View 1 (cartoon, rainbow, N blue to C red):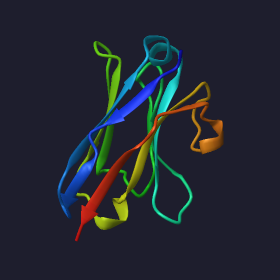
View 2 (cartoon, rainbow, N blue to C red):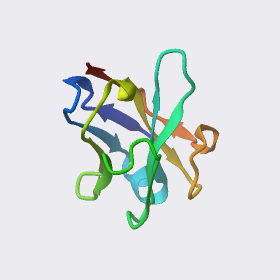
View 3 (cartoon, rainbow, N blue to C red):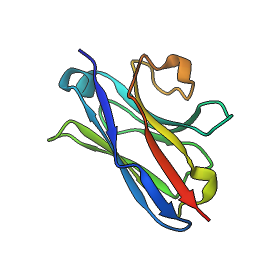
View 4 (cartoon, one colour):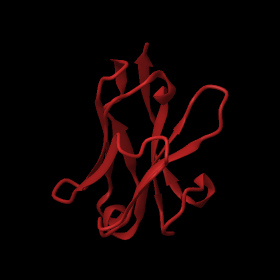
Length: 123
């Protein structure tokens, strides 16, 4: 069974940092490429970052490049999104998702989704 469970969201001030985590079922962790998306109120879901099943390849949206880092913890079947220099435009619900395709930024290409975690950045 494919399961993705996000955690780590919260409220932070502009310029602060947060670390999101996504616990992934073992089969999913080794077989799928993983991505982070976010959705702000009234906006479409947008791509944030992706990491390949091997962990060797990563991709980032231009809006987060240089500020966010996507990593894998193979021992714990967990991926992390380290978010630095946050600003109010980063406020959204963040979702972890899995896909068998690489490299794709389209939400429609991701087959499995977590429930999301809220990130709020105050000005």
